[in-house]
Image (tube, rainbow, N blue to C red):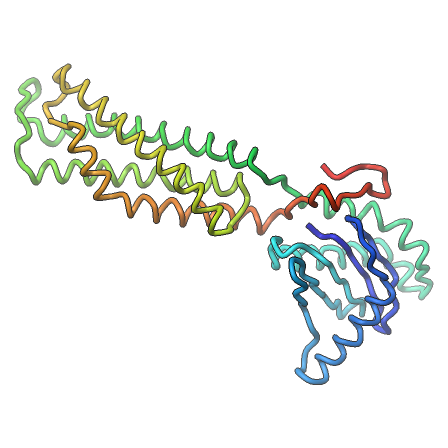
Length: 306
């Protein structure tokens, strides 16, 4: 989440400061500091500074060559850098559209900017906040787990049709499947279709949870894989029921299911982790983390952050 936003002229004058959290930052002091350090970096390294890391926070700087202003944002290290930069460019465009008449006339009043630009900034930033936390983790796991379980039952139907179509010797003649190659082929197809089911499940979990941190992704992976193992057990159970009903004659017992799980478990773990991470990263590129409760303040419009 963006904690503080600054707009600074080319000469180093701070013309706008918006704080979304409890802050003791002197905007004029910071404006002078950013101007000096940006000029220094341009002289020594050939380009202006674009980012400063400050412990758990980051100061991201965007220079608009058209307006000749610098827009800086103090944000959490959790927030995606590309999203912050994109937001700063959006703010620069909104600033130009709202104050272009003042800019053309050369009558840009600081008091007017602070009065009229606050609602615009609040709307831009508020639309880019998405709640995180254990509630969203549970919601993601519920939706992802449901997708996976439903996909498992679809796979069961496919397996039954596959056996009937390719391995039975006749329409009503149910010969036992004794060929090891056939059994390996069936289990490989079964796991392939289950792995396809992992992709939307894992992406849904990662996107709803909204975090690409590897520890978070790994924790969700373990839970999803647990759901996956239950789905495998359900497949074995339904296959056993189908065998009793003579839908097909294939001995899938607990030992067989466990062997299949052990064989494919590393692939399950890797697939879940990768796609949960991708889902979390996708949300981070679109939405900020919310402001921590201890730093939260009331907006100037009187609305509290949701």
